[in-house]
Length: 143
Image 1 (cartoon, rainbow, N blue to C red):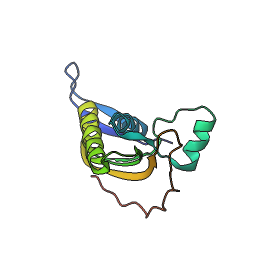
Image 2 (cartoon, one colour):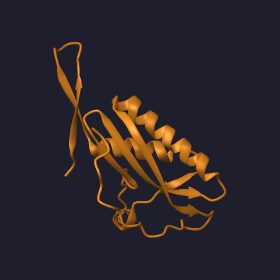
Image 3 (cartoon, rainbow, N blue to C red):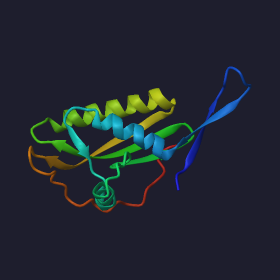
């Protein structure tokens, strides 16, 4: 089930109202913004997204985890990078592009964009992606 978060907005034709963003909406924006950056080969979503891919389903939230508050967003991206690129530069460009896209499209403040490079894609070969590491229990990062 997808969580929805409310953002108070004053509408010109009404006294007040609210805008609700599903977590998946923020994740889709982040995933598209990340894959638009040159040097990113794709997103790594683990076993479940691999099954979706085999079934022919495109998962636009693959490799993206978001934590959405009423005013802020924190994002974790799990990427596969093209071989031969400057990984630090690509990661920095991904962070900037994702932050800008989310803030421009939603008005929410992005408090962090964490880039986890899980693999390297070598031309004409499938991406080399190790299994995802176990994650510690998440701590709230947004207010």
